[in-house]
Image (cartoon, rainbow, N blue to C red; front, top):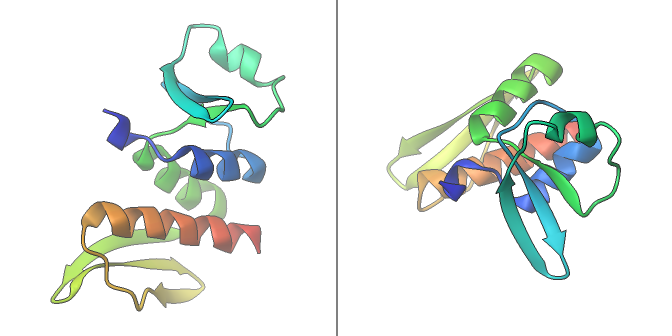
Length: 121
């Protein structure tokens, strides 16, 4: 099930970009250990007042890609080709990766990193 959630590092970057959508779980960092914990009923209310980097929401990939579409008008997809997998992002023109990834999951992670980078600019 943890494969459905983005990484802690990506979630933390999204938090800094203003991502604050309801999520099923959140990450907690305690020393060097990071855990993904399902939310309690009062988590979203508590979350609005939490600004530290030790906890952040743990969104699903699907939620994050929807957030980029709705909030930043950034569209993307992962595709398969002869050399492996790649991705494209769209806003004002096409940005296509020149890299080849061995798996869909690797391409999806790289695509999400690219979207984060584009919004940071």
